[in-house]
Image 1 (cartoon, rainbow, N blue to C red):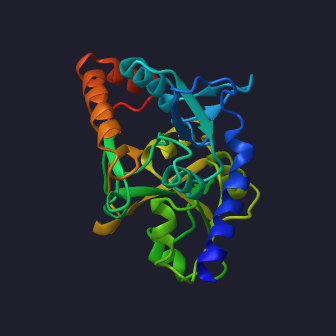
Image 2 (spheres, helix red, strand yellow):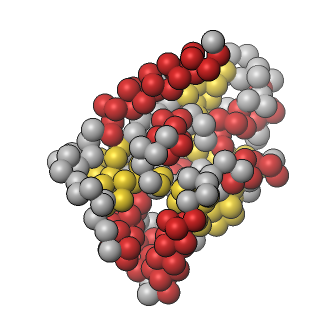
Length: 262
């Protein structure tokens, strides 16, 4: 009975994500590399005014395809949960989504490091000002009726599970988080440094404090996710990323998308 219910639930999740990944190229060749991404998280991936995929991950994925000698089909999914399920079920070949490398994820999938540095803290972002006396999550937890927005299944989501007196609100994009704090629906939101710095540069009314991460939630850069035991694809991607680093192409994209040093 439990197995049947899980199968039904999994199918519903993939159907929900279908509205997102149907944005992908509809005429992609059969030998195309199917890459899952998640829009709404610049500078990694977003959708411009013409409906085109743009971002660091988009540009790098296309360069990776050229190194592998294959066309690229980018599919846009609505959440990390749907991305992970699609990878597990073979609906996509890999995930490019500014995906944090964590101890927990390394046990579930292969992750090829391609950008970023170790992250030992994330940012708690407020609108206009940080409330008096608030310098960490513990001090925020002592106040009543506090709401913090997070990305579902991200490091911030797992961190907030350790503060049950704060209401955790899962939102699908950074833009949704900014709107939520601006309208007073959330007290603040948690995001990684690369995203926070980009948001603060665009919106001077946002302010933040840094939140140290427990050792088990620390991030070791961003990785390209590949299904466990897919040794052939793993080795090919590792070699392609190594080449992109050696030629300076990857570093050039990091500078272009303001990720250098992240």
